Image 1: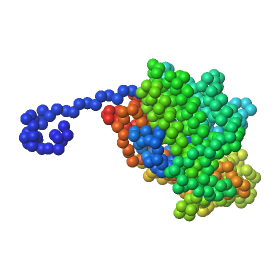
Image 2 (image 1 turned 45 degrees about the vertical axis):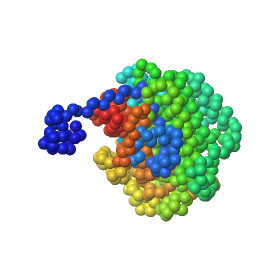
Image 3 (image 1 turned 135 degrees about the vertical axis):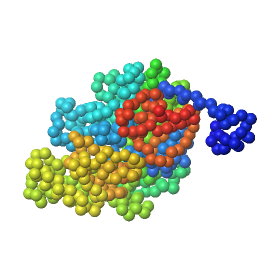
Image 4 (image 1 turned 90 degrees about the horizontal axis):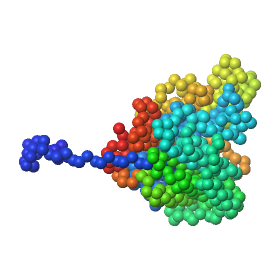
Length: 549
């Protein structure tokens, strides 16, 4: 057939005893069997930049994934590059404008508990507060793939394990068999009346014993040594750490490779105890690996700490995949991240980024609110929210005063040299939903992809590139680096698929994390109606014909 496409018909008559019509067609590839287990892994704050930096160093689980379908230019395409909105896109196939998860938290002036609301809580619970909340899935407005499949076939089992409640809940969804996440001082917990299985009890006992003892330094791979250099960032010395920790320091344990080992240890026990993939229907397992995010926040992304963390996560993934292999189950893996991350500005400036800086106090919402109140002669507080993203105007003001406050705040933010863009709620709402390659979207389109008419702020501000929204500290800070910006270093993440027998390939063009869910749905033969989700199916081929319908 290939020859027939290249040679004129007259030459084909000479090249073969038959005619062009007699040329046999190539055999149809055998149908790719449906996997029995879907495994989706999110590595918190695993940017496309980190993936590109270390991909040729991996020897374990990441190396295996590199032999599958590699999409190095994946996008959490929206503006709200935080943990909760990012995780809400992965298994729903929808952007935050549809999931309703506009940020990790938002300000609700009219709800049952006025004030800041956490994305994974039920604020209706009596006695709850922003800092003492009851975890819940009620804020997620759309179903996940696992719950769609479970609704269609109740025999489907869905399991979600993560280091953060918002990761487990946003990937697991509303209808789930087992859902477990880490809570400081309590270990792996859940919510509702879910019984604690033996696997969770064992995981908690092992973690408790590990935290109780001093943690020795991790071995530094030779390829980490070139970036092993101390630097002072916001009063804290970082860049040459190896995660040695004193006894009973849970925070440092979480910000180390040990935390991911515990998370995947529990996921392993769940697979083995529940015999996932061996039931009458397809099972779904989601895993949220959270340590990379804590390392990024506490040490930055370009020191020895992150290098050691990724080297260890690579080995942890390798052990996890080896365990899955031993089960004999036909499984498919998708791995991505909820967002990227930005390194500490002190190190970025040394690397030739003079624009890198910490947020000036003039951007602080309290500063702006006080200045606006003084200018307009109004009593505060007038503004609520953070320093990068949504800002809410007090609803105790009259409509006219709210407009005056909005206009005055917009004017001040727009004039600030650290602010790239400021939009009103009306401006974002009027913008069409974005389409096309996500790297081409305007800042307004990125903001629109995160916009929810009920939950989003009255004003949205976005800092300029490499401005870290952490003000200079007078004492050594715990968090010295972060994410959450509208820029591509926070939006770009890798997307990797692997399955036994897959013909590996790499697609350099941009795709989105919302494409993961419809791709997996097509792979297992689960039909989505047109327009059901924002994402599209990605063709994994795998030597077995097209994945997509």
